[in-house]
Structure formats: structure tokens, C-alpha cells
Image (cartoon, rainbow, N blue to C red; front, side, top):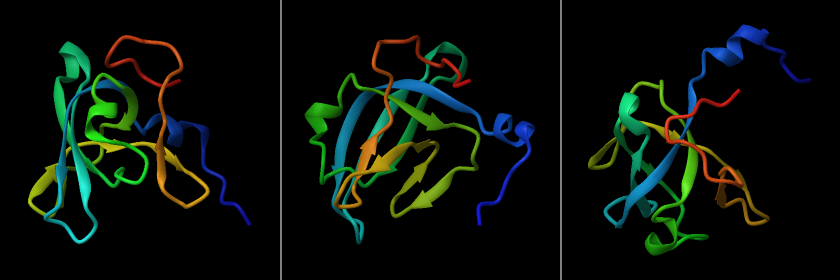
Length: 113
């Protein structure tokens, strides 16, 4: 059975859009990842995230891609990196992430509503 949440619970999760400025492979982890540097605009600034995206993306493909991310989680230590935001995606048929991204360019830092 699904657990229902209060409508205001959704608003406590701050989901913003940003543009990936830099993407580098991190093969020092058990599950190799790509470290993303994401521009969330002037108010929020640049943030880093580590994501297991290598099954569906190359670093070059990620540059200038806009993505949605939760920006108000506590930073998390992932191997040798502090991940500051959680990029969002959906599983493909192999349960590998496909990034959640707007289908038109929007302003960095825009909040999901």
C-alpha cells in the first residue's frame, strides 16, 4: 500500500534546475560514477554531485545538459567527494538512471512546482 504524504511535505523538498558545466569520471569508487559540476544560477551557485550515469551517458554528452536536482539535502560523502545535491532520474529497462531534464531550456535555479 502506498503511503500518502501531506501536500506541504512536497514543498519542503527544494528541486531546482541547473546546467552541467563539467563532468569527470570517478573510477575510484566501487561503482564508477561521474562527478558533475552544476550551475544553479546566481542565488544558489555551483554545486557538485556524484552520479552513476556511465551506463547511459558520456562526460561529453552531459556538458550543457540541464538537470533537476534536490538542493536541500545535507551534503553526503561519496568516496573521495562531498556530493552537495541529488540529481534526479528514472530507471531505464536495465534499471540504470536516465536524468530528469526539462524539454526546453529554462533559467538555472528555477524551482519545480
